[in-house]
Image (cartoon, rainbow, N blue to C red; front, side):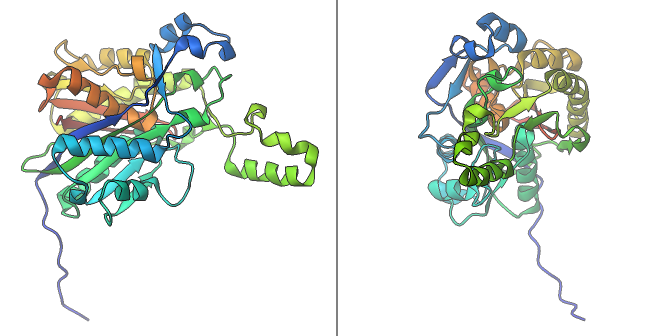
Length: 351
């Protein structure tokens, strides 16, 4: 038996977010443009969600395009080039290919090739999952700089007549670069999933349903219309709104408290609170549950951007730092939660 000792990378004291980048589609869609199919009103949407507008990408703009733009913005902000990125992680539920990954293409687009690159599917918690992985990769010595991106084109998977979630959703991408730090700049991640509530937020159909319908259409010419999006076969999102609201407010408040404890800080140490931009009422209730002091800036990007799933936290961080640059270097509690039901939270030092 060999007695040779394997070499291992040196452990690091910590990691931190070095920069943040964003991409917001130029098409801004106000509530009035989407209320007719759901028989609603601008007032109803504002009262229920706090959303005034959302951004939507055009048909020619893909998840890869948005992710690339956000990544390039993060590189510019950090004064770095793509060849300095060792790993690219993209969280998305709207990239239309199971393989190859969006991350591999984005890595090539930004000049990070041949960095390892992969996608993760953790819905609205996906960005926090990516940060947890980036932190571990850097502290273990497996990477020096990791690009974490949340990118979604949710307009591709909405049913315009659905009143449960369609009017909430927007498109966009946010990216951060995580690098080494002499002291921890990312607290221990509190993350998990509750698969017993797997169908609380769900898609109406799978691609297997579409395949079966296509096969049926090939056999019966008059059945070809079954694959039309208007006939509700196209996979679109649905949610049980009241259940999601209760779970987010109560269970996720506990996860947020756990993340603070894991990082060894209290709400009084925070400069900012950056929750997933799911619903303004959830954000406001979160603030009450956490008893945040008035000195803590609260991200409310949802009013103008809607719910962008995995992209929402980095987009909200980007806006906070753009509008309040004095927050730079302060501590922020970030928490994502969504379909699965999945969640992830960390205290991070802002770039």
